[in-house]
Image 1: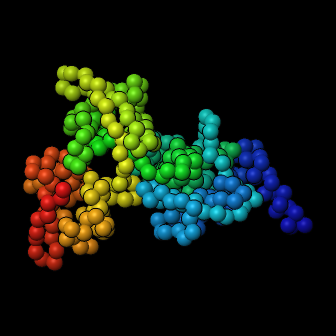
Image 2: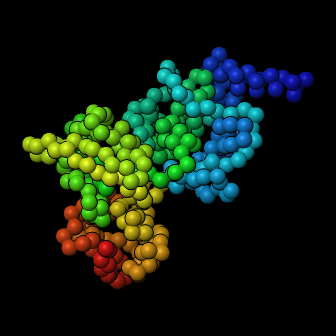
Image 3: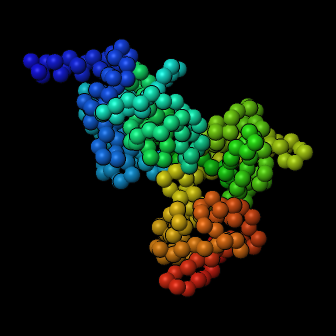
Length: 322
């Protein structure tokens, strides 16, 4: 009898989430065991589960290291779908409670996940009242459904890069840093992006369009530079940093840093530079830096190539990156 009641409840939660509201979403989270510690196991079909994890997941079908997403094979009778429609209400949900909430600031690329209008628990799912997914709630913020959909539906998991970092300043979409290794980039620091492929859109959407663009594709952007409006063309290249990875422009050269600017990964192509794990980066191009953002800006104006000042066990040394 108990088993029959449980099955009936599962069917109700799975099929009639809207009728049950967020209370049914809590039950569905509990039944499907989505939250396990700081990891989320989200059934998205009868045979596949979407995983958000800061630790490696074995036997993944595919992996997005920028957003810490994995897709694995796992059978489930009851699963969650992405919301494809207008949402009239949202809540952060785990297996214990639902907190009705709204997105305050949308996701801005890989580095700035969406923020909520009040403090919320994490991890969890951002769901509508039909238990459809609006986003994944992480300690860094919310991974919005557009990024989740791209991960699930795209075979090529590379992100695009136009060789610049964008930021909203005085309600304008401004180029605030420029990749010193992207020698063909037509942009300059301070350029204001007006149009992307002939369309006016919010800055976070321009950033998203660049990230989602096919590697090697060409795009036209109109920018305001000083008193002039210029039409520029750029070819999207592969992005190497951002999100859960470091984002300093050095990633394309195989060098990855942590938040305190210690070297945490040196790829084969970076071995000739002689860097070791644990080396601390102190400055770039004659400018002292203490954060990845400061490093980006220092690298944006190279004088004679890219020169780094590092420290290793008490002594300092310079390295020139080509």
